Structure formats: C-alpha cells, structure tokens
Length: 380
Ligand code: GMT
Image (cartoon, rainbow, N blue to C red; front, top):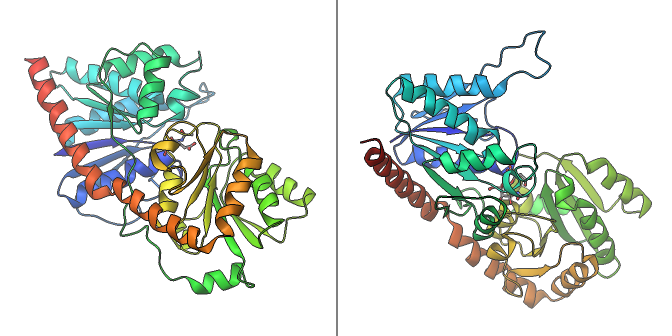
C-alpha cells in the first residue's frame, strides 16, 4: 500500500506512535509518505521506501499566525495526487482530521477519492478537543473520517461520551518495538547515577499539568525517607521549573536528576527499578509501556487507559490521581521486597508483550484494507 501519514513531529506520544508505525509498515514493504511541518524526531535514518514531505508554511506580514492548516491541506492534495496514495492516516484530531477532510473534498472535486483514517490519541479528545473552541470541528471531522481508531477502550468510551459520534471507533492499542525497548546491561550508567547501590526511579513526560509531575517529586520525597533511592526526571515542558523549585524546597537536589529530552530512553530505563506516572488523564500511557518492556514495574494513577496497561498488584500498582500517600506506600512496599520486585519485573515484561509491534501492525494493515474496500463501495 502507499500510505500517507500526518502527525506532529515533536516528542509527544502521538508523533512517536505515528513515526514508529510508518517505519514498521515500511519494513513490511509498504511505501510511506510522512507529511509534517518538521522531520519527525524518530525519522533520523534513510530507508528506501520512506518519504518525507515538509509542509511549507508561508510567512506574510498580514498573518499573526501562519496558516498551517491551509498549507497542510495543500501539501496533502499535492502528495496524494502525485505520489498516488491509497490511504491517508492522520494522527491527533486537531487540526489533522479537519484538514484531511478539506484535502479530501478538494481531491474529490478533481475526481479522486482518498480514504482517511483518523487516530485519536488522548488530549485531542479529553482536554483540547473537548474545549468549546474546537469541539464542533473535532466532532464533525471524526464523523467524516472513513475510519477512526482510538488507542484504548477508555479513550473510545470518552469519545462516545463527549461527542455525538455516528461511526464505529476501532481500538488499536499503542505498541512497543522489542528490538529497541528491552532490558540491557548498562551497569556503568547505574554506577554513575546510584554509586551506593540506591534504587533508581524514573518519570518520563512532556511535563504538562495533566501529568501531575509535582506528585512525582512528592512521592519520591516519601520513598526517600524509607528507601535509599535516586530519581530520574526525563523530558521537558512547562512544569519542569516548578518541579526543580520543589526539589530545592524539599532538599532533594542531590537525589533528583533532570535529564531533559532524551533520545535513548531505553538505556535509562534499563537501569531503573520503578517507573512513576501519576497523570490526571492518560489515554494509554506509552511511557509506562516503554518502562514495562524494559522490565520496570509501574506506579500509576488509575486514569483513562492506564488500567488497560498496568495491572494492579501484578505489573505495578494503581491509585486515584492525586493520592500521593498511597502511591508512595505502594512504591516502598515494592522497593523493600526483592522477591516481589523481581516477580513484578517479569510480569511487566509479560504484559508488555501483549502490545508487541509485530502484533499491532497487522491490525492497522487489516484496518486500512477494510477502510479502502468500504470506501470503494461507498464511491460506487
Ligand atoms: O501525553 C501527552 O501529552 C502527549 C500525547 C500526544 O498526543 O502526543 O500523548 C497521548 O498519546 C499517546 C500515544 O497514543 C498516549 O500513549 C498518551 O497516553 C496520550 N496522552 C494523554 O492522554 C495525556
């Protein structure tokens, strides 16, 4: 198949999933065309059947905001037309589903039908999409997509509750590539970060309010009082400075390392004993899955799709978002009991295998085929 992929090229989960999906499909022989405003972070190497089309947003003194949507629609029209795409897959509803609809209409006026699949990732429904400033367009463009997928049952449910949706939503989970995410021997890193053999705890996110990053620091503060440990804060975003300030107040600066955005997260996860993700809302929790694939148990909130990934009392523990005391107690229980920790490590890996990219990719391929076949019938 010739597949166009539209996504945000940044460090966010939706961009990562879209890029890894495209690269995985390319390895299976499909021709993949990424259409984005910048080269996606994980699209660093040459691959024969992978193409990248940059959206050129023209600046002009009249524009306070460059018209990205118009430029993207025009680029989609161009790529579908000249690369003869079979299907277009857009990730994150805002504005991609609406832009895809506009491109579809332009192409239709030229006598060309392009089926569009929209994947809902989370905040495009639960946080931003739900906002009155976007909601009517989000609802309309989801209904006008030829196929819609959501990354968890929970996100599907939220979408059906928050919007008036007239079409079926297929759940296709986030996935993990075990060639990359697996526990490897990084003892030299461990010695640098935890020279006295302390436990290592990690958190990865874009440091937005919805992640409750401050809770991670408070949980760690409680853990430190019972278990010698170090905390790795991976990623960057608006809440980072606030968290650094909190570390100073709690006298934790020597125990917490803020590492910023990291490309080789798997090398850091390889030395960790526990992963903490206390989000207010989380449609799936790709970061938790990456940790579990590296045999790291997870302390999480029970928000959104997290219970579909992290199994309470098996691969980690879940608590209500904001229940810092319970999350800390669970973490301490696990970190103080070596037998339990090893058991949870093995369980985490076993659970992560359910989301192996090798199993999820065929689900997308089959779905594309289904959508293409259905749209041929619709057009006829
Ligand atoms: O977590 C974020 O804020 C980034 C966001 C995105 O769209 O880039 O992530 C969402 O999509 C990921 C991939 O499907 C999911 O694993 C995350 O759970 C989801 N984030 C939220 O729902 C907050």
